[in-house]
Image 1 (cartoon, rainbow over the protein chains, first blue to last red):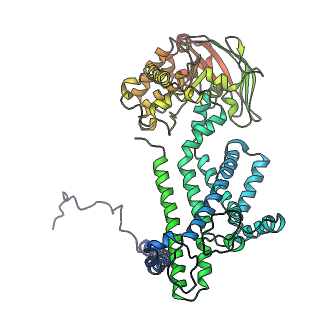
Image 2: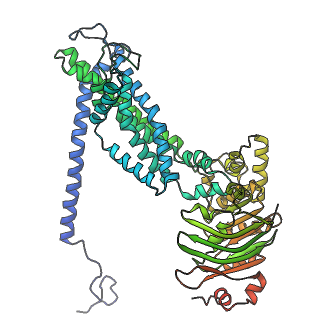
Length: 304
Length: 258
């Protein structure tokens, strides 16, 4: 018996590398199971909700009348009609809220990032915004009810709803805009100053355009969120089955309010309207989210 | 164009920290002055004080005078925005505006100052890009984003942007430290050309670069951690690199530092 010294597969010393140890394989398997489990737990209710909403609501919204007619003059058990009045209400209340919230929110964020620094006012503002972020929508609604309706003597109206939504939307806009402005590199501000461009112009022409895609995405997501809020419409606007274009007086429908209303309607017509309104709201919000993605793609700084 | 700078008894602070002490220095027109010295010695801080960029940092403070052809840029009646329009700056890392095209980057200073005439802006863009030796590389894609250029091209774009507003003085804060040797060479050639029209002050960590491009060299040093940086000596570049007046300068340029 002679050992072949030239055999390259024989090692003179014990090998440096070994197979993955049993304990590591067990830990790996355990962690993998946990992650997959968490994923399934998260995905099951999501798919279930979507399935329910689509299965019950989709046939309803296929009818052209759904998008063009209100429920004016129809009895609760009568089928037909549409959700135009509620879609209009949801969009217009959200839009008015956005028109008020966006400038306020962006200007607060500009103050915080570009001017406030570590001043007391900036700290106080950040603190207030934090508190406002945590205010439940029902509290915002009741606050507006107290101040706007009881105290100032205005009636319940779509505009009151918009004001309550502003309270919910402003902190979200401030937060997202603040984050987006913060990630604009200081080098760009310095480059602009070094060209003899004043600070305000640097903010308007350099900083905001650089952050614009993120800011608009944040606004779209905030809008999508407030349009689904139910508490303000329940407290501050009465439901109307007909179209009301007047923001400042009279009852106005919205999709969440329509759902609450039709839930009390035990007939087949009520069931259809409830799920039709649900899928319509989901669709509108999805549309806004898609719009946010498109905007951020189109406006993002390019390199090609 | 091309004015002289006189720095007199300049003391610079960040909050309570005394960053640079008693700097006095003359920068002649149409001349390249290099600032060299170890990290943290305050050479960039001095450079940034020359167009009032130092005070942009929170808590930053300036004492002393900086005279541009005899006019104190720190006089209480002077608008810092005007100073920066007159004394341009190129930064360490190329920083083109990401939302703008190559052309708009070059004319950003003029456009944001209110110049609207398209023909005039196009002329300025071409003249500045030619001045920065970038025209031939980008003339076919002026409307493409500036971020798509290579690092060296971006830095030349930033130089074009700085000279488009026709400053009297050009400050450069380690303009080649993020670039490869070929791009560095391109920028150095450019500096030699720009010297015909501009007064240039350049901060560099690369001593060969200082020796290659500058006419005058200022050596900054700091005596210890937490101490303010000081100007050790300033002289003709040739003399600094062959026969410096101070032991510290000789140690630094010959690599026996620290």
